[in-house]
Amino acid sequence: MKLLKKNTELRGSARQNSSLPHKCGVPGRGGTLHLCGRAGRQKKSLLHSFRASALVGIGVGLGLLLSAVTQWPGVVEMRAGAEEKPTRSIGVTNAPSVPSTISGLLPDQSHAMVDVGYHFANLWFAADKENWPLAKYYLEETRSHLNWAVRFHPVRTTKAGAEVDLKGILQAIDNSLLTEIDRAIANKDEAKFKAAYRQTLEGCYACHTACEKPFLRPQVPTAPSVTILNFDPNATWPQ
Ligand code: HEC
Image 1 (cartoon, protein in one colour):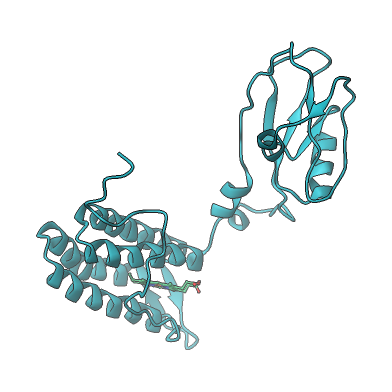
Image 2 (cartoon, protein in one colour):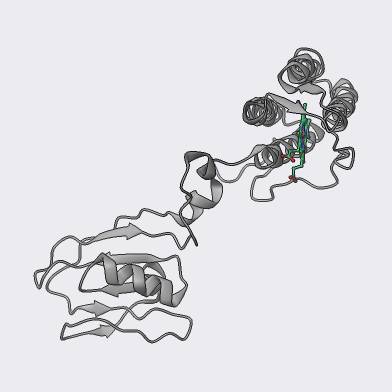
């Protein structure tokens, strides 16, 4: 999902002023494919050159080809005729293949669990900084991603043929351990939070071992998964 989102950027481009000389882009990375039939071309601005990896005058088909050639998941601009009309940009993906079934398009359980790990790790640092609204946010994200993960495989079968009821295990964890974390956050109780967090890690691991994956052993994280967010509740910038 994330990958797809990353590669499928939809952007609108600004209307070009027809009195200005036409600016034309050359895709980067040493590629010098240049397809523009207009006179009055100028060296385009750096900004523009980053925004559009390929400018094509003859349609999307060639645009796709270009994008494949330059190996850039960039934006292909379509230009309609000689008149300066508002231009339209479309995003293209450079995905190697298109899965034929809908299940091929969905992330799998381990993908959802990576998200669980991401949110749950950040939760530790939010509480550590006593940023309780952020901690509450990450707890809710952890919960919803755990539910999402379990929806992929509500039941797993062990090698011996026994059925592991993941949904049931998660419900138990949610009702006890995660609820305990929730309470600690509500009470802004760091000591209780840390105890409940560690217990929850044991709960996580209980499910991993039940699923015959004892090598997926969680620990108290040593660094947050995100650095672009400021965990300091007293930060004053940006306003
Ligand atoms: C209900 C069962 C269950 C619970 C509860 C559970 N997990 Fe998982 N988790 C799994 C399964 C099953 C996998 C392996 C998925 C796969 O291989 O498709 C997994 C895999 C993972 C992975 C590895 C993802 C990867 O591929 O790199 C992480 C990280 C993880 N879990 C974190 C957690 C954390 C943190 C918790 C507790 C907050 C937790 N899990 C709770 C079942 C569970």
